[in-house]
Length: 315
Ligand code: VAH
Image 1 (cartoon, rainbow, N blue to C red):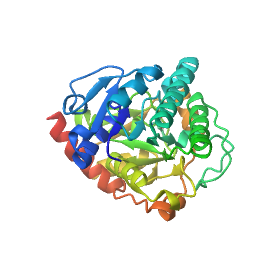
Image 2 (image 1 turned 90 degrees about the horizontal axis):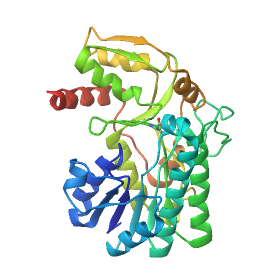
Image 3 (image 1 turned 135 degrees about the vertical axis):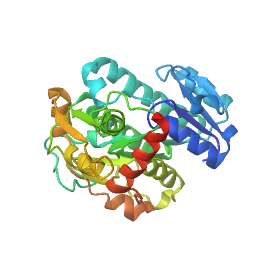
């Protein structure tokens, strides 16, 4: 990666990824794009352009002018928002992905886009979910992610585009708030613990999902993109995870720092049913074997860092 063009650069992952990539590859070598600009470091600290990913010609022209050699496509609607707007989600998630893949093909770029544990469904083995297994997701987001994995594989086999991707678990960060995800409770709980000492979860106790701290997710993207492509047996769908937790696990860890923290429940049936259709835990052995994936943060280490950083952020 030398000249990196990022879509959705002001989203939950993109906003931190942009800043990190500028530190690694040089500010002027990383162009952030999104559908609107804001006052975030990602938008203000280096090259930025307004790009609507449904406008394929604008994407190609902007990336060409920037002399991009890498396309990192992050722009997409997450699971809960997609479920509320399925037709819009299909058009944005699949139309945007096709435009990004076409841009990579036309300009000869390396390509990354994330998949998700959302790419699995109710008939997928739930515990230690294999790298290669049944994928019959029951959500529009999941359908988009499975189709996206297959489309990115197609662009590799049919056009020789160096496409790569990761099936991310829920990502937890103190920088950019998540938007419209099912796993967002795992971010909100930390904010509420600091602000109010209590949290009402929309996901029920006993609902296990894979999670990962954002620094591990960002490092995994760079490690995969810098890996020797000849050693990759999989390309666009590596299972990666750091922990499998339910709301009670997170609350118990928070109480080690905030003893009186209270967790209650007001379950949202839509996001609960999405969560129940996803795995409890992933098998990440393919990522470990093929490109040396390793997560540094477990629940204890993540909780300590999240609470400390949020105390600083929230004053
Ligand atoms: C969501 N945070 O909840 C995203 C992610 C694994 C979950 O895809 O939709």
